[in-house]
Amino acid sequence: MDRGGDSEGRRSLDGTPSREPSLHQLRLFLVLAEELHFGRAAQRLFLTQPALSQQIQTLEDRLDVNLVQRSSRRVDLTAAGRALVSEARDVVAAMDRFRGIAATHARQVRGCLRIGAIGGEAFMPYVTAILAELSAQHPDITVEIRSINFVEQTYVLHRREVDAAFLRPPLPPGLRSLHLATGPRVACLPADDPLVAQAPLTLAQLSDRVVVDVPIPELREWWDYWTVNPRPDGRPVRYGPAAGDMEALLSAVARGQAIAFLPAEARHDYTRRGVAYVDVTDLPLSTSSLAWLTDQDHPPVAALLQAARAVLQRN
Image 1 (tube, one colour):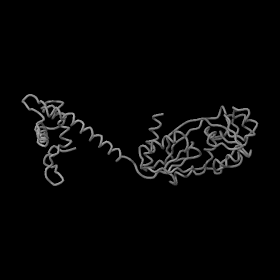
Image 2 (tube, rainbow, N blue to C red):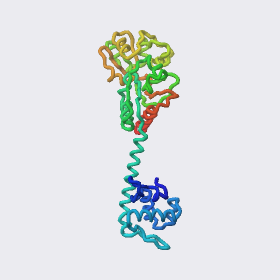
Image 3 (cartoon, rainbow, N blue to C red):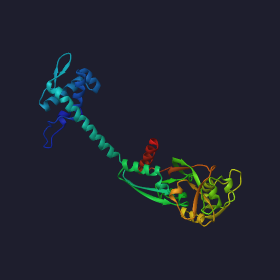
Image 4 (tube, rainbow, N blue to C red):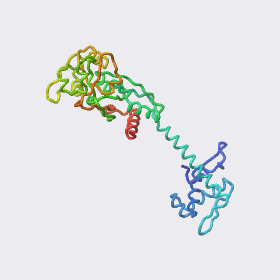
């Protein structure tokens, strides 16, 4: 904002004192036009009355027109003053908009954001909405999506190979997360399994089926959740061949080696020959989360979280 004594400090490009009215002076004039009293206007503006009077006088000198008629008791606007009030208001409003747009762009974050996504998470409606919001708010952030398999989720963030990841809990330790969605799960069976025709099923009906396993011990807790191990009756799951990603898992199911449990969206995202998806009435729900490292202070990650929270608040 211009200072009270800018009548001496502001100069034109050629070095001579400026004859243009300042935005600060226009703001002072508008307050005076509302109050029609130098004392009250000065109080609102946190100025002394002489300082306000000097600024209005300088504005009149620069415009070469009288704006107010002074008396001992009140102030009246001249015809020129009344005519210029709306124009001054438009100028001030336009400059406020100008500065607001500049401030918005100044706050925009730039850089590259590497995002991991397990399975078909990158195509989920909540993820596409978050990325669209991020692009709208911060168009200078470049987003790189990396598909990660079952094993990679245990280390991809800790090794800082990605900055954030869309995962399906339970999450690896040492991560912060934002819950995005909750939805049903389904059983993934060989298409020729007799139980397919009996859907919907219960977990008890699937108790004798071998379930696809995972290849590393670090995934045990995560996979026990997904396979409901142990089952509600206390019986442990019988595991079969191990699979490190979705294609290997679906291949094992299609060949009749085992079954699996997946998010219900798999019906649309992973249609494969020899594979059928069936509802299971007592299968727990699954959740989706955005995860990042606890010590992550990368500005694009903060922008991603801001976008995610904005989307969640609207929905």
